[in-house]
Amino acid sequence: MRLLSWTAAAAAFALAAPAAAANLPFDPDLATHAWLATMGPEATARSNAYFEGGYVIDVVGTAISILVAGLILVLGWARGVRSFLERTVKWFPLVALGVGFFVNLVSTVLTFPFSYYVGFVREHRYDLSTQTFPEWFGEQLIGAAIGLVIGSILIAIIYVIIRAAKTTWWIWGSLVTIAAAAVMIMVAPVYIAPLFNTYTEMEQGELRDGIIAMAQANGVPADNVYVYDRSRQTSSISANVSGLGGTTRISLADTLLDRASPEAVRAVMGHEIGHYVLGHIYSIMLMMSGVILFSFAVVHYAFRAIAKNERWGIRDIGDPAGLPLILVILAVVGLFTAPLQRNLVYFHEQQADMFGLNAAREPDGFAEAAVLLSEYRKMEPSAFEEWFFYDHPSGWNRVHNAMVWKAHEIAAGRLPPSPGGPPEGWVPDFVRARQAAEAAATDHPPE
Image (tube, rainbow, N blue to C red; front, side, top):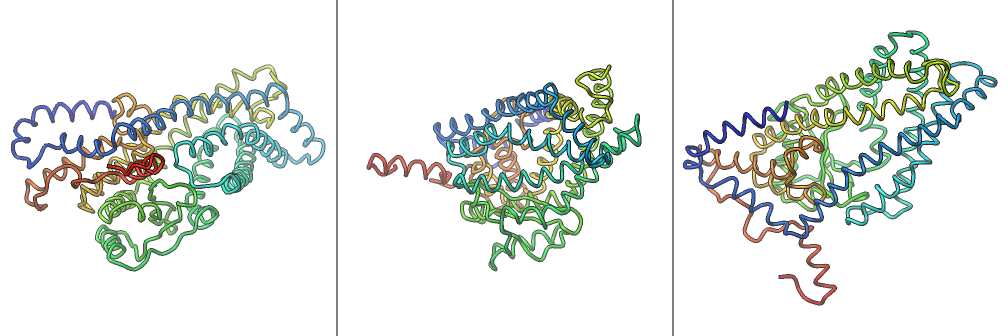
């Protein structure tokens, strides 16, 4: 669907370009190239390598998950735990809870080396992490504990539903999973996020007042802006909309305040306000519900075929000993649904981008933020890469959209005239930092 819209847009642009370009104050394509050129070849190559490595990590991570679940299944560990619990606790919900806890715990332990490389070693290799190992490991323990408790309870509930509903369990199980996800989204800002970061009210000032005014002008009932200490984990910039209903809040990272200009901060917050105003939390949940329903349906029908005749000692789909097989099927299904899920998120991010441009009216700030994000995102992917791997518009598309918007707003007289491209001499701070470090190592000042 996105490919078709791109094709139509490209055709329309090709027909309209000769007439439109003559009326614009600058060429958006050249302005976009100028913004991207501020990174330089070294930073661009580094960004590309980091992001492209993520393609391999996604595949390898899924393969490891399948391998671990497969081992637990074939070696009979889940079956042994189920038999032990049936002899001791006997009550089925506790049996399912215990098996779920065991499988989750073993999976977490066996996949830890991979998590350590991806989340700690690799992040430090690309100078993105600010954590020591004890700090990082402590957060991993907290996250694992939350996942073990909540995941095990949800698994137990699903197995109770399987036993009760039998052939229609996948419908009711999907509804329960969706409801659980909604509850988690609702409570996360209040109970989970504070376990990892401290959220404080933004300091009084012109920037804070401008953000609140922008929010209120777009119907957001905001009387405060929250800042969280993302610098505890990473130097990268970010902002987010979290929560659901009464717990919804828009937060920005302290790294964004420290590294970006006020114009870029306003542009990013305009994007986040767009998520709120456009109801993206609800529409994403609705669309993802279809993915969950499809995945559970595949599990229902594939499980029967794979585990028939009590293979691996699994009695039926209602037997908790079959949990590893369910995880294998979900992982395989995820390989096919992942591009769809990324495209669904991409659609919403693109909407928020355009909303943010119109709300904040900071095209140069928006372009600046896109370049700063390029520290860990490839700026110019191929069309296939962006369609298959990206859940946000690429840096090229974001900067180009901002420059097109700016050029047309100037042409319409709604913005004062200004050149396209970055301010003279502007260079991303991460490029300056690397130049300074190299100069210090060679005792030569950066040019």
